[in-house]
Length: 406
Image 1: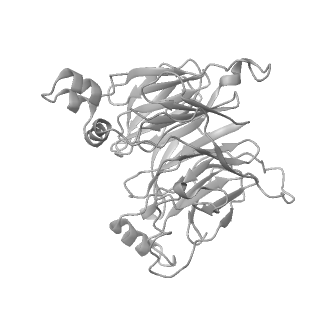
Image 2 (image 1 turned 90 degrees about the horizontal axis):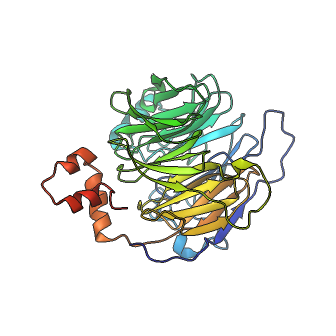
């Protein structure tokens, strides 16, 4: 069981965009996306006005306590003597909607990248993909801020991006043109597949950590689950009463959560399509204002890195933290105009982005996972629900391993 935590997350820091210059009509101020690099060394912030800030993590010491510092590669050994990484400003030329860091490429991927991009100074590079308002995707090298590739194909806003966690440099993009597209960055950014079937704008895409499944959420009541091996539709998950706008897999790939304008988060077994539980967002008393019925519409949901907590952002000006086994939030934090949220990959911090272009960093539960949960997480990383159910073990153990003990 997770240990008790304070009622409210503490605000560690808030970043605000500098005074804007003269921007043209295509610009906007919203922070539609925030992301940490998988190693925790960088934070990317779509700060509006076509600008992405790449910020080394941790932030300056006066903002972030030492216990929240990243266990990052770049802050430890620096064999090339480059010194501390510097903040970068990426001018994308269009409103930036989606952000995604690549995993650190595996050695074969690095060799392929070097062969196709000999002009790139550091072939073992961490890269950032940015999804733009005009349907373009720009690929940047994080360490230098160098633009590497420009991917064309989408006919409308690229709303979300997701790399395969395996390091194979396969990128999935979700767009308002109602399609998802699969790109292979090892092959000059070649488009290798177009996934069609959604009838509305695609808001979100998420790849399971075991790289077997892709979930996509559009302005529809159902979400689509695709095979990342065959790029075919596995099933539709139906249960929401309004548009689904966000989705995320648990770290062991055994659970999928979806968030909707209907004020509910639904937790699914992606292998069976079974709905395991719903988390309903009710308004706190007293209500903050007299806004319309959609005040609790959800904007974003994400899993914590150890898989025991969820964070959600809703239009009722609250960040909520949920424990996996409970039906009500364990903590709240007041935030205005929230759009997105993500956990720091080593835990302890949640980053949120707002319509005003601000980023806020909050304390998050830090928990020592039980041995039971660690064993479940390890087993479910390579066993499907059906494989667990076929094991010659007691029923209660099967229920625990398949998250049926809520």
